[in-house]
Image (cartoon, rainbow, N blue to C red; front, top):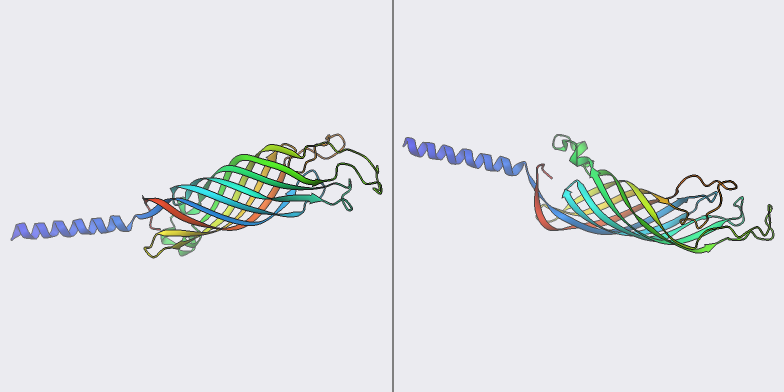
Length: 243
């Protein structure tokens, strides 16, 4: 009888341990892909930027549910200036494509959100950085000032290239909203992202004017503001926290 009691106690403790261990862990999919789009605005050597558009596709590898390595491809239009209102009568339109590798760190990786509903709801908040290239294709640009320009009519041509390849460094700040599937796994993600893209070179606006005459002492930048959708897939891996 004592043996049966010990065996029953052992089995009970084992089940409690297994249940507690299972509760403290969750499973997640190791990969995701997605797409989205939004608007962008340029900040270049041209006096005033304008709004354009950005569309993207992304593939991520999830080191954990809240740390990702990914590739992002973009296609869009960046523009700036106005031939009538710009001080130098400059304007440009760039139909660009880019590809970057990036890493993102979410709040859920560094905080104990299990004990706070507020932190749990914010666990998808993230920052990120990347590196890659942008392919610039200038489709419209003012190379020579118009004859009616107030200053130096007919001046030109403004130096620069219509096609170029530059290094790009994106900085990301965003939020992932997770949606579970019917089995309780994190499967779908709605993504909101703000991205600053620093480009190194003079290809984004197509102008490469000497700094002695024009302000030309900082990287050309375009900021994009997008919303997108991601789908998680692939092999399942365990995570130390409850998801």
